[in-house]
Length: 323
Image (cartoon, rainbow, N blue to C red):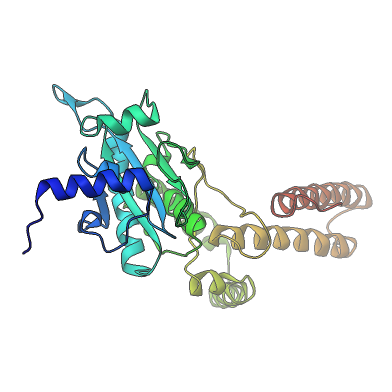
């Protein structure tokens, strides 16, 4: 291993600062750890802050200090695993992506804190690719700011989507298992199962016919909704916004979340059933004219409300839709 004298390193750093020359991607100071992240220190800060020609810079400013048993910045600690998982996924899935992930503890890099005039943490900032000859630095160049909140710091899909959109790549990520979310869904579907078993099935005479009908409807439903499209393109079933709320509709009509497929299909099914009932209601001998009129009005109002709701959802995807 070749040892470079300290005075040569500092001389190189001084010259780099004077000329604002961009460093090369193969420079030793850019060695990344096993999670594809470079730790910024007071020593390497003057060099790494100049950027790399053609590479995005994503910088996570954090604080790991503690007071007693509590961290000074709990959000910092909660978000760091998410930050490293996304950086690792980028390295594994798109190794040629031109992006560098940095992490800086405010206690370890006082020069960075002074240059950026920071008064609080955490922050995630992303710089666009600098060009050779450009006067680029973290302190002076413009950047994108990723908003951190108590919900988004634990949402790997949200941050992964930010990184993917920033550098125009697609990365596949998986959320961590949540016991509370699992118990919620498990209880909900157990309730439905018990309702069907105790209430619905005892009143059905031909269970085989019903079972085959439900199976046929399920196969048709899965075939025509486009859910296979989301599977083939690794589009998540559920996506959440910065507040941790489920996003049922994606922006634009070129793609959709998995849950969006079922939501829209459910709207079509409800509107179709209402339309069929409006057609068949006159043939129901058990209803007199007055009841048929009341049911017709109720079905028409339901159909109108559902179509109005459908249009409001469509405006989320196409805000310029005129109708």
